[in-house]
Image 1: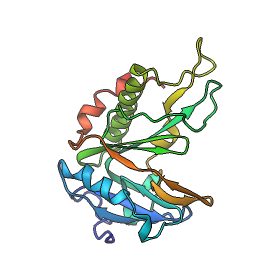
Image 2: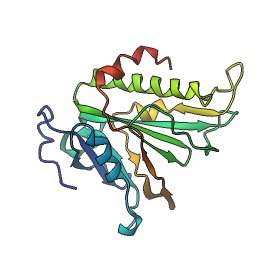
Image 3: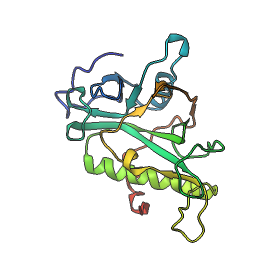
Image 4: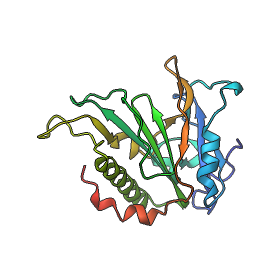
Length: 220
């Protein structure tokens, strides 16, 4: 991983990236370059697939967002290479809990299990620097993934609904947060080891436009 050298010039055109850090209290990360095109998702999968033999980091985190001076905060957001959706599993009572089974048939580039749900990653074809376009793309991506879940009968229907049942739902507070960190698939958090294999499900990147056009379908 090489430190960022261009973060004080957030509007400078540059390639895709990953921001990585250690420790939840450490708001500063390191910018890691990704190749453009179809190889970006594959390289990201490789970078996030940490080999336990190299040592397991304590509270390793990552993001596809970029911030001025590598300082993770909403007001410092200056671009993104993609979207990571936090997809929570809820039991029939609406309680966030461990999922009973895995699902892989979702729109995205990369997917991996989390202790209480799934992480779905969509990689862009180029860096997006407009907050408005980014927010629209986030809503569109969430709508597409929940449509996939609904088609499989895996979308959570909460107790207030007429016929509640267990399933998955996008956590908007995490997924739409421009300063959010996500735990590395292999790391130690609160004393517990996480080791969740990543699955590359699509090489081709997404355009912000194709995701943003679906923003109107997001109703929550």
